[in-house]
Image: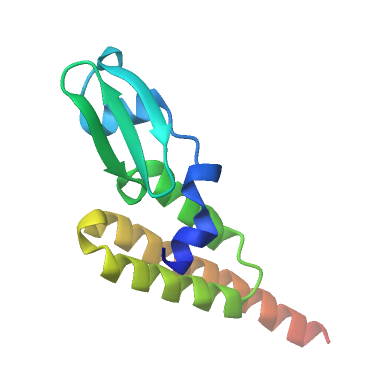
Length: 127
């Protein structure tokens, strides 16, 4: 389990809906019997072909959780640690991240860094 995965805790914190799973799998919702959030994956019980495992990292909820972590970083040091965790996780699980997601997260980190640097500059001028 990577530091990013431990930080996000997807099985405890992510709300995975039948609708989002159906959209991801490109199937009608009524084909899905049940969705279980396991420690490392989501298990989908399907009416048409049994069970199917899905990595949390492939779901929109994962991207949203990371984006929230970026947006709420209180300082540059923590943002840097988070960015490092994202890079390590995406290298280790290359097949589970699409380039569009990585570009989006990279852009969010840059924007948050700019915001935090602006705040630090304002605080140093005010002191």
